[in-house]
Image: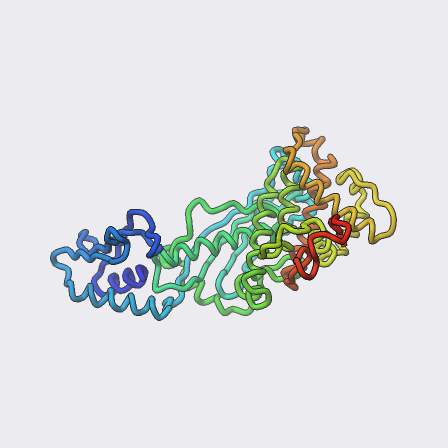
Length: 405
């Protein structure tokens, strides 16, 4: 409602400025005092009464009270009718710096295998437009040079204001996480939040390109990363939540200089795809994790088993059938996550040259690939994992011990 008031007051009374103060009201869910003014400082104020039930209107001299009342009535009607207004465009800039291997030597092997160069324009549905620009380099670099990303974000709202700005900030953070996953290296949060595209002078460019079919969807390994348009239609809100949690964990993991901390976060990101939003989510977590990894990316598990540095990286010697080796490796991965959670991470203070080929560094590289492939498969085909369900897969077998079947 407040954003409708701002739009109507700006268009009809020239009151283009607003401010808010006080604490968010529990009943209204908004700040308890709002002021709408023009360049001369005159306007009107809305303040919640002491019971947080009624808005009290105060109009300055020279402002037509009847016009203000009309604006409030129409804004309230639009809000009650769930009229979100039209499209509002915001702009921002993101940057992915060239990796700091001196400071994060544990990530060296991972970056070499994960990094992807992306140049030019991409999209995420018709709501986010991206333009990747890679800095030039005089010599062939080991790592993809610094990459800048211009972002255009379209959200719904009556106009630029507190609601649309909050929505745009949320979309921008999700976009940053998606770009991090697409590039395989961190994308830093913007110094400032998104600004109205009209202010940056890029509004018409965004509008013109919104329906340009020649702009490709941002993807990773040929899998669309459109979490704004495609995924909600396939997996709904539950899948969105799981993928968001997995991306947050991935983003944090690839910034760690300690391999135990990175391990915790990678496994957390993988587990986020399997944990149900249900009261029994804590039942049989290991069995559910093993089942989910095998269901989503069995080929990646086999690649990990065949990796030359697998035994050193995971302190694991495979034995028995391929089925047994797969399950034991995944169980060991889960154990490597659990041990430092309960006892604290081990130190990782090797020199950059020593750390590059260390067991911990190789484990980070293998886990990153496993996490990436598991997440991409989930994006392609979201699903639920029911191990631990009290009726379908009880928490214990007849002997009272958890089974990993």
